[in-house]
Amino acid sequence: MEIRQIIDFLMNLDIHIVDLIESFGIGAYLILFLIIFMETGAVILAILPGDSLLVGAGAFAATGDLNIVALLLGFFLSTVLGDMLNYKIGKILGKKYHRSRYESRSLFKFINKENFDKVHNFFTHKGRRAFLVSRFIPIARTLTPFTAGFTDVSFVDISFFMFLGNAFWTSVYVMIGYFMGNMDFMRGRFIYIMLIIFIISMLPALFFFFRNRMGNSVKK
Image 1 (tube, rainbow, N blue to C red):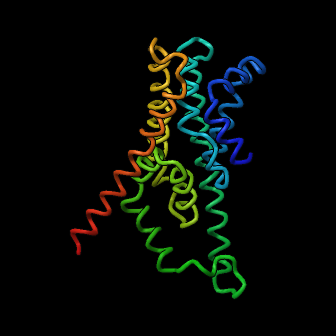
Image 2 (tube, rainbow, N blue to C red):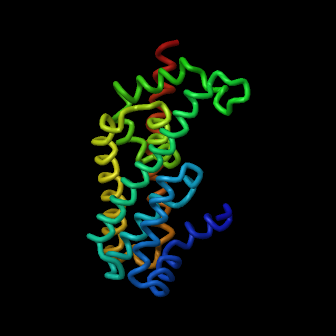
């Protein structure tokens, strides 16, 4: 999918969801779930719509075109399976890194062993909660399970936070769309819903950016 097509999809998400429902009926659920699964599980497809798709689907649940319970369960399962796939991909590549890091032509020769260990220790001791935060940050939610798998972090150690983050993310954004879809003054103004969700999705990233800037200023 080209960048132009993705932008068009996002800007006209309400139209596209209507087309999915009219063209595929109950099959529209599978397509929506598949998009979220790929956005979460395929590292290179992190640019696919995530937050906006959840909100858009929730808005259509408010009109009765989609079932809110099916959306909540389906999106949650899609993100869990996506994270597990992403983690597995990282795990496989991580094993190749260990086997080939001493080879001069290795694709992983640019990865410093010290940095590798730092990331592993971060996820093992403090970074498990990163799954709660990164789930709300585009791109980061795709890189987090991949990085955890690549650095050989135990899935058992991160699974609780992963599942909790997925449940929180899917339910929050679907319900935002659902409640906005029930507001009379928001109907027919889907672009404003998209603008609001864009601002909301940027808040976690802005928070950590300014917190790090302030932390660095204090250290100086």
